[in-house]
Image (cartoon, rainbow, N blue to C red):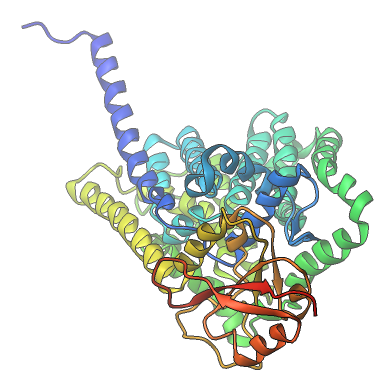
Length: 506
């Protein structure tokens, strides 16, 4: 028997390498599947979906609107990204697909870049660590602005590093990514980048000559990308853009004026460190030993290359700047810190690779595989459970029921009311903006039925159970109409549908 030629051995080695990468990608991407098994969750997903439905219906792709009113809480990229998928794939598979694809893009970007600059083993570990971090997985499966922001932030910071150690033209890619990031969630990304660039300039003297070049052209590209939306919107809605979006949603949240999400004291200081510790477990427990502290890879190991050490410090600074920024902000929600998770994954992935590749032992192969499958089951099970337990599923069945009805629809007293006792703790007492998305029609929220009942046409009223009291019925009857509960043909617990039927002239 002849021994394999060098060419055959090379082909065999390359095939084996591809199988290893396929295994790592399977582990990382598997937890993202199943996002189509349950409907949108209010309030954030419902708000964004409702804006997209209005854009598709009106053809106005510039001004976000809800119930006909300008709504400037988020810039436009989340709507532009997801609208085509909703238009093509419908309201089951379409709404979250853009987020999932952005997160897959983040996985590919981080893994391939680390593999290029360090080793295949480090790249595969980065892929597995990021893809099996609960916080990253949970947010990746939601219709939010954070998945595209995370991809764009990672792209901007990695391309900037590439411009420092390689071709400086990569700085133009950085500028475009920063501009798109501003379209994704606002101008705070520019402040984070400025802080990272400044820290890198002062901490890495050997890289200072590489900072020269392409700043004016980069600034021009950045301005053109940002102006594609901000300029026409400012001309049309100047006050709303400056007041509601820039001041309230960016400066206000940073300064703690958002009372709904505000924390203070020790809770403020511990919130995001705890979110990272739990949301990136078990990998977050390796962050301490992964943190760049010395000149060696590991105890007794070979000296790390200066450029590799500088990259680790750069990634650590990016993670730390984001953690400090959001910790100092008084407005805190868990998904705010998601853009920092890829940088944690890179640090931990590089450190784990020094102990051996992810496929180097059965324990690692089976352990990471079990973690991936466990996350898949956990996230889907909890999401499906909450979707039904919170009343979202029932509300969406009502929306599908009214979809083909000819009467206009209003939502009556859906948000929590101070004059009424709270509903069952399981009920999501928000305005349920996703109802209009699934109903595929304009639905206004009202607190009183006095004005709608004056119209001489039938009207459907969707509301929570118990909100149509004898007092409300009496108000409607005094306007020459009556309220009739509609039989929807399926069991109901949390919500009701009524029909206002005019009885003739008053």
